[in-house]
Image (cartoon, rainbow, N blue to C red; front, side, top):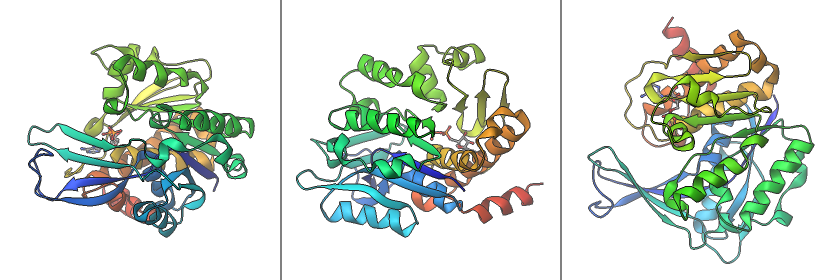
Length: 320
Ligand code: ADP
């Protein structure tokens, strides 16, 4: 199967040992590897696909721990750099009793923000069938330049570009800047995945309807996916659009569901990108990705909750 190269941040999430508490009230924290692009890379290898991660970590205990986790899952780690000065990024994350997520980041700056264009492993990027990225790596220099260069190199080598903005407003200097920068690379992507909340943010509309989603289509965009949590996923191409229902589960922690969904979908696309053009096959791939997203919500954490291919198949079989 084709290589998925995922570019961006990997960090440590500190999650409270107690549930439904604010960050200030949390009695203690457990460390959990995180960062959407790293989660996506692992989601791909868990399903039997091939992936590489490109990014920068601190040359510290946490940075080497994270690189070790990627390798343990079979992710190609030759594109990882270690910064001698800055630390691996940390994020303290809690789900409060009111259901709201609270984030507190330690990035002043963190190693991931310091990736330079000249540190990129161009050979690895050129071997990608699919090149995937988010928007957190666009926030500051020099990482922003590295991100833009990596996209260009991947595109020139014939990769399909996949974009999941993965909005984290707290990291941006302002709401306007977030929207502007996220949209600044919009028309470079072949494939974009947004959540319902991101769709609202980017269109400025309160509605998640077909018209607002279709306002985000651009001439080069082959596919827009809008994930809707327990309501599944909508898809939009130039020729058709529709909806694939979610796989029904009892969710306990939705962390990583979107990354699991993306990893699963990219696995299918890396095998055969022509599936975007045929609605029946596209719906099959989205169904598979929905099952992966659903499974990920049934276990705590992101990476430990990513399913293997056989888990997905047995669940799909059992439901028929
Ligand atoms: P994100 O994590 O990016 O916000 P979503 O929460 O929309 O993304 O989840 C991504 C996908 O995971 C959904 O499209 C759906 O297929 C699946 N999923 C998420 N939450 C649930 C749920 N509660 N029940 C079933 N499937 C879910």
